[in-house]
Length: 88
Image (tube, rainbow, N blue to C red; front, side):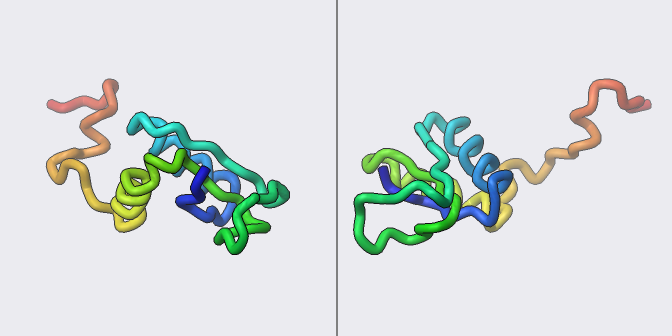
């Protein structure tokens, strides 16, 4: 397992895990008390999101897009997505 994100807290870690799982990447959250077998691994003592070795690059790219707030659809209007809104 490769750490791809060091979270500020458990909610932050959950958001990233959900992002990755939604893209079909198996992602797991390791708490601050979970040790690693890798020497010098970043984020030891913090909450980390980890993925399988072969999914690291795709996971990092998704996280980078998420962190920069790259819009998926510039025409998307959150208020238009609510079914009870009166559009007339």
